Structure formats: structure tokens, C-alpha cells
Image (cartoon, rainbow, N blue to C red):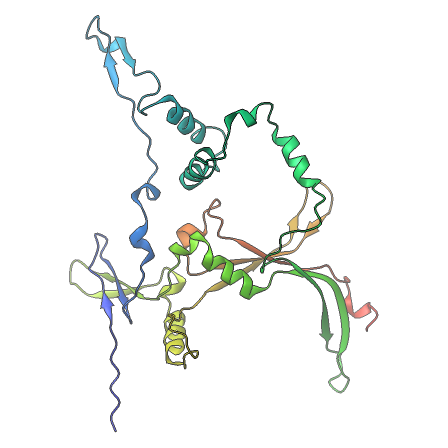
Length: 300
């Protein structure tokens, strides 16, 4: 008996840098297709200068007054606010401010009379409502038991209890991340990155992302060979988890510190993942401090 395996492979055209992609299986979703050009370059409108009506001397050039280049003063003030002060205001957040707040049917400008951010935050912190919101990826506190081996292989290991381990369930964090809008930029289908030499047309492999590695390609191929869940027709993809941990000082003075555990998704390009304002870092745990010499502590 002969088994014939058919694969719907795909190789993209070579771009201006000589790079192409080779997919073992044709992807149903390509995140880079939806990246707007505004996210690839920072640009700002260049004010048009007009000459004074009294002459054509370039030294007497004047600029268009506000709201140029915008149609009205409302948009002018909004864009001025966006490009001034803090640099944490992205295009998406400004659009959300306009659509979800300013254009809401129940938004009333008069309600902002004598508005105070500090007073509103104070009222939120002092909310005494009995019911609180709960989420599947909320923090959980538990105790961890460590089994410490002894010097002798004949003796059993000693157990030490470490209380106060705070963490977020990883499965819940993964579901929350894939339901977030940032998941639109996740690469769900691995591929080989190839570079074509313009002189002799030979191709070389390029390793630049986790989802272009052999390990990811092999894991994806192994996943597709496994039996599907009964009644499930969804595509099966891999979530690449990248963990990072280091001690963090909690203040500019003193010795107070914490040891957090961070999670990044390898499905996101390193160029987006490494951006300080990308929001791609997920805090998933805090490691509690243990006895400096755990072997001197009292076992359970």
C-alpha cells in the first residue's frame, strides 16, 4: 500500500530586499497584510507657506493659521493634544477616545465642569461596592512545596513550604491574549524565510523570528498530524511562550524588591514585541522570597 501525502505549499514572490517566504501549508491568515503604512513611518503634515499679499519676497513668508491643515478647530485641538505632552498616546487610542467617549450618545460636555482627575480616581479607589468584577485570568494565590534533595542519595528529599506565590493561570492568559486586538498581528503559521542572491540566484535560509525556526515548523507539523478534537473544525496553531524574569527594585531608595515573571508571545514580530509601548508584555507571576539558606530552614 502506498500513502500519498499532498501539501498545499506556498512560496511568496521575492521582495525588494531579495526576501521571500516558504509556507509548508498555505496560510489562511497573514497578519502583515493588514499593517497600515502609517505604522511603518512617522510623518507629520508639512505646513504650506504662502507669501504676503504685499509682495513676493521670500523673507516675508507667513504660515496658514489654525485650524490648517485640519477642517475645523475641534480636530485641530484634538490632533494638537495627541502630538503634545506624553508620548503614550497612539493613533488607536485617540480614535477610541473620539468614538467611544466624545461621540457617545450619553456624553455631555457640561458634566466636565469642575472635573478633577484626582477626585475621580479617589472615588474609584474608595468604592465600597460588595460585588467586584472577576476575570478568568485574575491573580491566584497559593503555596508551593519544594522538594530539596539531601547530600546522601539514600535519604529522602526534604519538603519546604513556600507561601504567598501569586500567579495568573497560563491557559487563561493565552485565551485573553488571543482575544485581544493585538492578536491580529500574531503569526499563526510558521514559514521559512529565504534570501535570493541577485548575482547567481542561489537561496539562503534566514532566521529572524521564532516562527521561522525549524523547531516551530516541526512542532506545527507534529500538531497537524495529531487527532483532532471531536466536533472541532478550528485550525490548530501554536502559541509561542517566551518567559523572562529578573529582580526589580520597587523604589529609587531602600532595598524593597520583587521578582516578577513576564510572558511574551513569540507569534508577535520582534520589532513589535520589543517596542516599550507595544503592551506585548504580560505579567503572569511574582516569585516569593525564600530563606537565604533554605537548607537551614525547618522542613515541613
